Length: 74
Image (cartoon, rainbow, N blue to C red; front, side, top):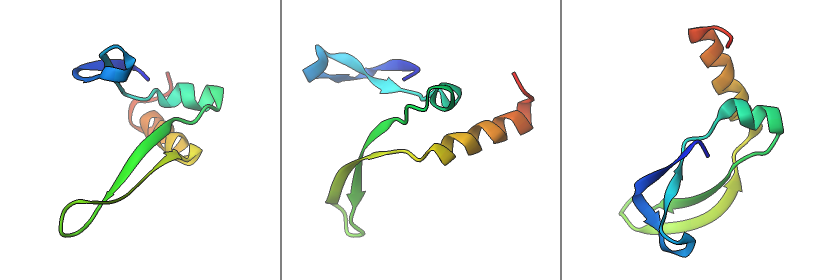
């Protein structure tokens, strides 16, 4: 997590802000993939499914490759 968003607070965590931003470089350096809570919305509205997943490493590798292409290596 890069920071916290104080607009959306989590009661269970003493009202800390929600985690915001993922450092793609740190994910690739450490190999620790972020855990995400996801929900699936139905076409007529409402939630029809939910779960917890880990984002694939390729998402972060692709993001860093595009960042390097656009802005150069840093």
